[in-house]
View 1 (cartoon, rainbow, N blue to C red):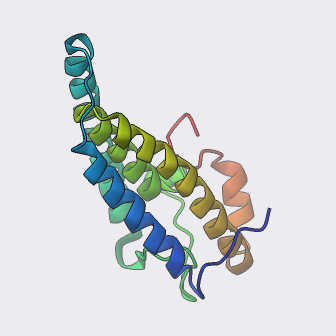
View 2 (view 1 turned 60 degrees about the vertical axis):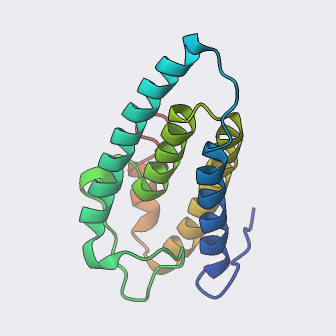
Length: 158
């Protein structure tokens, strides 16, 4: 499936990401009436997910260093980062944002935020696929890396 570019470097993908993340934050304040028996476990799970998300984001940012860009089309001087967390999953920043959104949604006990998080999961999967198509065009070694690191967003799961 050929995914749209949405701009020369994928600017439209970044705009959609900002809108979906913003919608998730706002939706978190639209708390639904969860039973008390679910609120505390949801809060604890949400906080733990947020801590894990922060660790993923920090490791991903640290490994990319100066090569960080929100745009899915890599810059011409891009290099493949395959060590650290990138040796476990190919898109830890997207995965970290997704886990953070899930943690937020659970901590806030918000069904609307959970719905936004589901949309974010689909979005990040599509954005990662678009980015990987560009990476394979630009970096011949990316196809081997993709085979070696089968997980895209969530360690040990997906």
